[in-house]
Image (tube, rainbow, N blue to C red; front, side, top):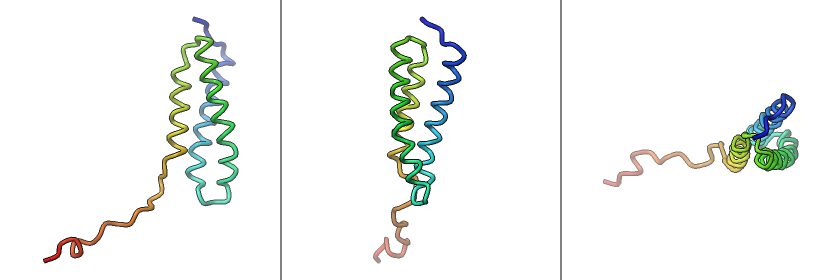
Amino acid sequence: MNSPTAWHIAGFLALHFGAIACALGTRVAAGSRYELVFQSLFLPALGAVGIATWYCHSADFGIGITSGITLIAMVLVAVTDFRRTHEPAAPRSFAVHR
């Protein structure tokens, strides 16, 4: 097993924390003027994390699983809608017809 250098670890952390921040930014900025900025940053960040996952797995650094978890978390954050868009529940008087 190869051991990563300090620069690998620093780059790994910076890439992954930046990618998660970018994914969260796409959800937080939904509907604002910054939405396009975060969306345009998200796809390259997703690709970079994918490449880092492949590289860490193939170089046998032992941190490939962590990269994979970050990749999965980015996809889940990107497709999950955190806004409340459904109608509120009907009042009890409409639910019971007596």
